[in-house]
Amino acid sequence: MKIKELFKSPKKTKKTIEKSIEERVRLHRKLQKQRKKKLMIEHRRNRLRYYSQKAGFVLEFHKISKIIFNLCVFLNLIISFYLIYRFSTDLKYGILYVSFVMFFVWVVLFVTLLLMLWLMFYLIIDLRIFKRRIRVEDVLADFLQLTSANIRAGMPIDRALWYAVRPQFGVLASEIEMVAKETMGGEDLEEALERFAGKYDSIMLKRSINLLVEGIAAGGEIGGLLNKIAIDIQESKIMKKELSANVTTYVIFISFATIVAAPLLFALSSHLLFIVSNLMLKLDVPSGITSFAINLSGAGMSIKDFRIFAITCLIITSYFSSVIVATIKKGEIKAGIKYIPMFIISTVGLFLIFSVVIGKLFGSII
Image (cartoon, rainbow, N blue to C red; front, side):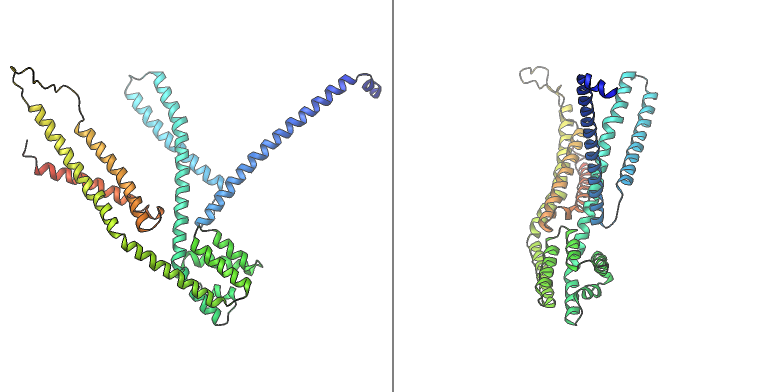
């Protein structure tokens, strides 16, 4: 009976087939969206794992995200409690204003804090990767010379690398130990070395490892090759030091202009503004002179506003000056991160000291 009914009503079967096709298409689209989300999450986790491995430790994505989220909630709770206390003591604020402020805190401010914390986290990891790269480059020449000596003594390459490790090599020692473990586990030495070089954005390290791998593949004398690579690295370091010494005068000029000259000029300007404002207040214009009357009712810049402006300008100038000094002296902006707080603290501190000293020296004028 069912077969006969199906043949009798072809329209119903077409509708059911179309509905089933639409449902299948919807399910397929949902599955595709879910797969894309999973792939994005896996990509983020792999990216974080990759960055953490380059920084020297392994981190889980869900743990870091949970910590950052909880920290944002904690900071927002502190801000909310403070605002609630202020609103409870001062009853002039209306309900709409209070609700708008709390909405701003828990939506806009929360998202801003979340983004800033993630940015700071990646910045810390990036700086740690940079420091590890510098440490590897500092001891690379000594390590290659020891490896060359071991190879000339008759050791195979993998053992020569292993026995050249010293505790004072630090990061490089741990990386070579990892390479030795991988080769003992059956992995090819060339692949392990290339993976080690790929962890760091160092042209020096990558070129050295590429020359070593090409020498192993060609079957040449590896000991002499490694010795020449080490000599080239040492010569490049000497050249960098000579270039840094040649531009020392520019570093001194920029540092003096930023740390000493700028705070002194701003301190003099603030005291000059104080003197002029007091003189203008004490200025007495005769009542008979009307054509040359001076109108002093206009609002100008106060001394407090000028000091805020001066400190802001000094902070911005110190930041860019430290970046320029790091670029001239070290060749990279990341190497100048340590100069930024030094420049800012010394510049603002000298501005405050100069303000007090100039105020005491010229205080007897008025």
